[in-house]
Length: 281
Image (cartoon, rainbow, N blue to C red; front, top):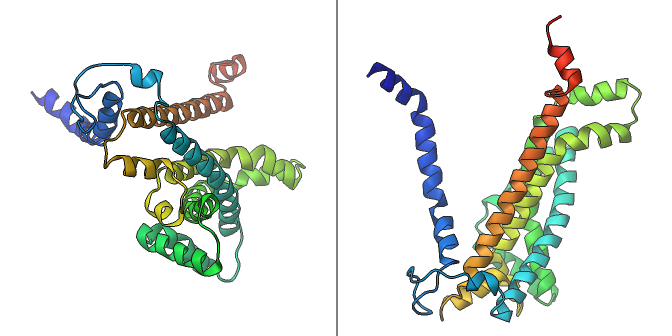
């Protein structure tokens, strides 16, 4: 009995964490299940009959696929621009001291703390006052504005935990600044940049409130789902959601696996040289 109590005491935190993760994953499981379901009616979400037809024909409605492609295009452009700008800003804030630095840090957090309703209406007023027609590019500008903050915070966290002595050692070995950045700094910061880019893309692809204020006649995937909810959401929407989740999971898994292999290679685990270095003489 004492052994069981000790075992539970050592692992209760892990058990609670697994329960919380299971609860958070429950909506994803439901969406994945509905992607294989043929409902009894268009306005019903009951599990009626298993089918693969929705996966065989994910573009049964052309309007939905056009909205998905448009959301991917907007998300890609916004991610590239926000990642470049956010990475440069993170390097400037972490590596340099200048007047107004604390104020800029505060301004960076404002888009994250501001309600999306306020940001959407503010951007709408700005575009109307400037005479900018609302559409594809106003959505891109709006998405870049709120994605930059998340990129800066993510890359800053990576830079703050990086050992500067590695760069100093590389320059002591007669590496130039560009060589040090390309061979030492960039590989160390790259996981943070990739994580920031994935976060920015998911935020852009998923956004509805800010997009709805600045879209004009342009329809993105979240706006299509919102409009279709009034007359019955097509089952293919669940297919798109499940596919996006699986793709994101695969990208994170591949990145984690490559990072683990790189760490094992750096430590010399499994290599003849590493085995000779760690074997007793």
